[in-house]
Amino acid sequence: VPKWSQILENYGGKDEPVIVGLQHCKEYRRRTKLRDISIGPAGMFSTGTNLLNRLLKENCENPDKTKYGRKNPLKFNLHQVPWGKHNPAEARGAYMVEYMREYVENPMAVLPI
Image (cartoon, rainbow, N blue to C red; front, side, top):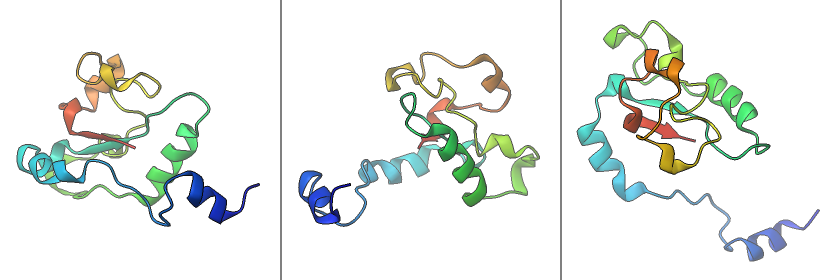
């Protein structure tokens, strides 16, 4: 196992997370209804998407559990993104897993994690 200093040297040298896309947050909030916001794991096979799903469910709460008639917690913490957990990002908006139609009205409001 490499030393932490070697990892930092090889992968950017910052000892903090890098969040890509922060410049889009304001526009996303402006055009997205709170009741449509959802999160779901997405990624390649064998990269921990099932563990990520469990961690999201244990640690992330619906921003507003009582409003908007959100009785089903699946509408916020999704098992996968609507375009398929292991599908490429290009599938977003072009394809939707059939059973996800029941939970997701606006696939573009889902934050892939």
